[in-house]
Image: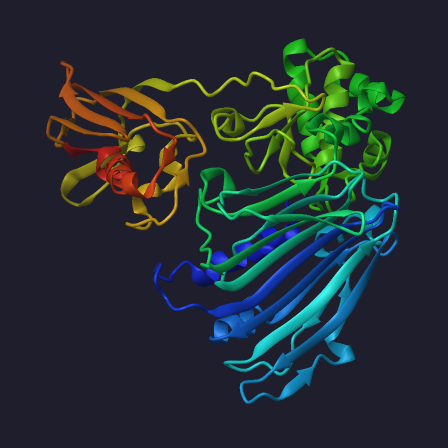
Length: 519
């Protein structure tokens, strides 16, 4: 689960950069960006971040980079600002004044009293102008006993290019250390220093990352550094497994009985899911809560919870009435060695069709460290009979009418790929496997006639195939068959043009309606 502010940061970037062509001038440039993660022998940790960032546009100055946000837990962590200033274009130094360090409650914790102890430091960078460079150096120091292990998942690529990127790990020699640069080829330097293993990646001239749909690390587009000191992925999951104990709680059993007593077995799962869905949502990630869950009884009492807390409660409720509820963990990166930490978790789930469809690309484990068999989505095969009346059509001028053909709401057309950019620099990982067929027998009244001509249009490419037919079926009836099958879920830039042509035809509104005319 990624940090909520990383998500907000990316969303802001999408809004500000979506209109830019791929070769547009950069909004800003990192002269240097470094991250250092240290695990001390006593279990304490330090994350240190240093950046030099030169601003080129008003968008960068007033939107993207005018502030820095740092979330931490003062009960266990200390924020240290080592240095913060702006160097203006003429060389003048403007140090960040005391009143530009504003401590607030993280927005994700606003409606969650149990987490109101969290703090967010907002650093308002001052003295900004075009050509100015922001310098910031800070650490978050974590006391022993709060975080179970050193656990790192950090994205290398930023919204602006980076001249020099450095990431360093310091871990005692006695600890296991798993690490990888995902989707990158730069090898780290590894050495021993004063009883520590020291692993350092140095990357130069990292290009800007423009966030678009399907452009995540699983698609192979974004470089990520992951590292952890767990003995194994199972050892990491044990941290969660020992907390997913809702089924053993009396309060959970009593609630499950209260909600489902006298209800048919077939309805009980929906009843329990709707109850949990109706509880308040706390948007804090597992990382922000220190990988800790409040007990299910507390979630019931307060009527809100984090995603993980609500899932724990739901699993307990389902198990209490004898329904299957196996919690699974899906990861945001894929590495050759399955030594995943908790920071690489994408989501926890019971049943998720999108993740099932992506299981060839997205690692999934149960909380006991096993690889489950997930049921991918079945092909969408929908057959309808549409009896047309004046009320089911849209009246047009001249006595013409339009009737809209039925389709599945979960179909790929809802994603709008056919109306997106005509070019793509990175891979596109589709959320679902695509195999859709819609057959509709349209029955017209005697006072209407079909104006849409009969046709049989098809397209075939290495990406997939499409077929659309409109044919008379006798007795003032017409049969429309629409079929789309993609044989690839990961679309490369070389394949993207063919994919977009298929999707443009599939999403063409003229293929989802029939034109009629009053006789």
